[in-house]
Length: 601
Image 1 (cartoon, rainbow, N blue to C red):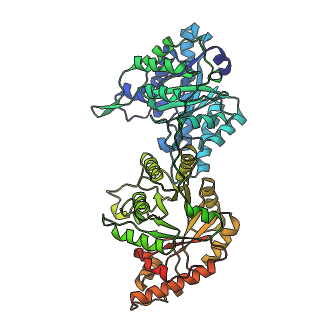
Image 2 (image 1 turned 90 degrees about the vertical axis):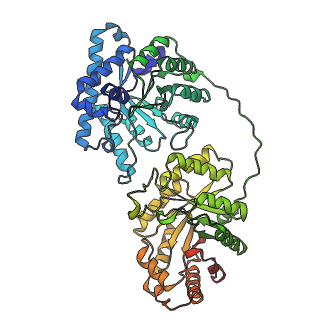
Image 3 (image 1 turned 30 degrees about the horizontal axis):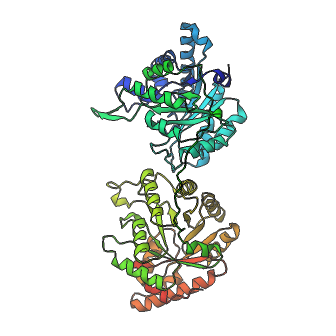
């Protein structure tokens, strides 16, 4: 019997947790159950049998965390672990079926279980997709009827994999997303939009949610949604939220509460119900006994009507910088560094000076070179409110995890910020790494995709426009390839590293001819001979020719150095004029007096 046929007459009950249940039985919440496929196959088999006897009719293989990065194993050992998991699940079904003839009329389906492969900066997207495909190949070779992708925050990494699976096999394909109690994934995508995205992929047979939240929050999230009519709907919440007990994370036994919520959720039109972290065979037994297998409310027949509160919209925030850029006029952006301490008055004065000198936007660096300064977004908000200038705070991936990043972006938006520069960020200086950790939950492209989703979900009427950094060094085709990835992720413009050499000016010209985008060319006038030699020798990615440095000398006065720096900047601007969309001034030590001396065409 195919699963689709079963679902015509029955609501499908899944098993519960494997990882947390295994760890609880072993008394160690740090154990990884996937290794037990090789080391303790009988133990895993017994857990599977418990779930089947409890009433589960969808059994997940013990492979959720069976990626090479998680298990720290090679491809051969990974394959052995996955194939062992398939064999164990099949043995469990066979043994229980022989013991209980009633199960023959209620078949047990086995799902090859796949969890997210964690982001690893040393691996490419293509390599990770290749690993997903190989895992799926094993499940197909093992003739499993179902493949389940669970606990995903979006479809970005698995869209290609899902299409690949359906081209090779007619397996029943389930995609489960993980959201928090507010109904958003770690990528900032709303639960309803995740289901909408799944609904548009014909290769997906069933979609829904697992993990992330307990049954109460899961029920509340589902109540606010309209289910896609072309998919079976699945929900597998956690037992609740773990608590620390004797240095262990444990889930409270709240099976009755769990079942009560799942009964309410099922009546919304769920086709498949079960449990995730913290649930046990006891939970599944009560669930199976409580939900009528004969009463099926197909999601396609359910329409949830929602009343939307009509809010009076405030006037749109004028984005003069982006409008000018879009119209093909050259724009001027000037970068300021926030202070190291609470003495912000000079930054306000600099911003006022730049406003009076017709600068289009002020960009605010985000703790450059990994040294803590006033938060770039908060300092930008201060400039908006005190000076009334357009701002573009830099947002780097180094210092904020996914939760803090989303909070910061929402905070920027409600404080009228509509432009951002999204960068991966400088690493923490080596001398501080023993006491300061970098986060890097995202790289710049991932964060841009996150921001793109936030624009669609939260800011569709008035989006945030964001740019990316352009490091023009290296092979031009590779530079353009990365720019296109950023553009696909929503980057509306690019700001380059400082430009000095004629060959780099020509590189920018060639890049501009290969990609249709807006480029603000970096201009950084030196304040002294020492400043020039420091940048030339200490800052990676900035090419300063000797002839530029030689135009300074150690005995120059500040005024003389500024005149030379302004002359060089003006010459570079003249050479860039034909193809630059604007200029991005990086002024060492916030030396805004340069702007009086530079000729901007």
